[in-house]
Image (cartoon, rainbow, N blue to C red; front, side, top):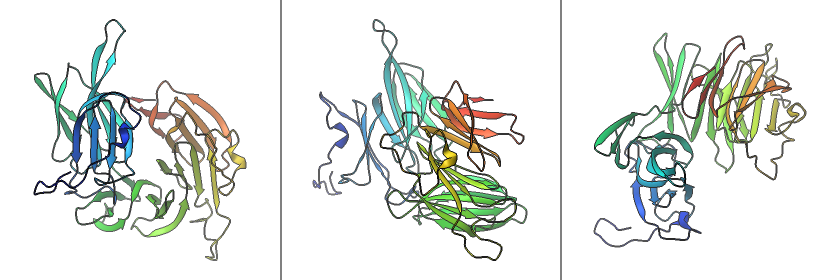
Length: 376
């Protein structure tokens, strides 16, 4: 690393290459400048990619806690999008039989925390360059003697409830997310600034904002009304990688645990307050492991993470007032009753679900798989 005058400042350690035997070369160094703001404070901005498939994401050049990734491909190029939220990595895998191995070219997409989002298959015999459009909605690929354009549909944080559209965006002059509550009937807008926003879901009379807490492993669920005023909140230890809300429940799920919060019943507006307005301690919360055969018997206080992680992680959740559906990477979908969380059965899909949704009368469930294919 050199300063603006060409003076050496420091060397960057390649933590991702530890334990690898054999020659390796750097094929890409991308450093997001933060000109359009950051996804969250102190997030990784420096990406270093090696030709052996290893890659590391760093917050700064001397970061000793880098995120190390094995892409599983032979990379040749990498590129951040316009706001540093998605990293595109181009490369190839060897496919076919042992006698006729051929290069299968693709572009893999990762978020700023190194989590794999999607894989785009690309025809041709080589990718020589990639470039993002200025708004981050298209990607140009130089393939052989052609230029391919790929449309990118980001996973926006938004929801709609009570004639109100709630959506989040970042601003260069603020470290927080700006969450806008737009009353589409009266055209009134209510901004709310939220630190470390993870997800937004909305349904019925409320929306829920999931954020990271100040302590490691701590997350906050904030229940808000149509003008953005907090109604209730919960501190949880389950990372809300998957989030959904119904008229009565908020459900958050990590890779292997499910947290269910019944914030109200059909007789009360918010369950954490009784008729006299006094806070209740007996709030209905449950946390259970996805491999638990009887989640109805556990409570939030009684949940203890198992010593060994599950091999079949949670990939999607959806719910309505009476049913909770939890999809796993293998294609198994667990069905639970609400609010008791009684196991009602399993469904087996032929794909890895990415998004699940139920229709209004529970007669159909729609699935979008990891490749973006819609089925019912």
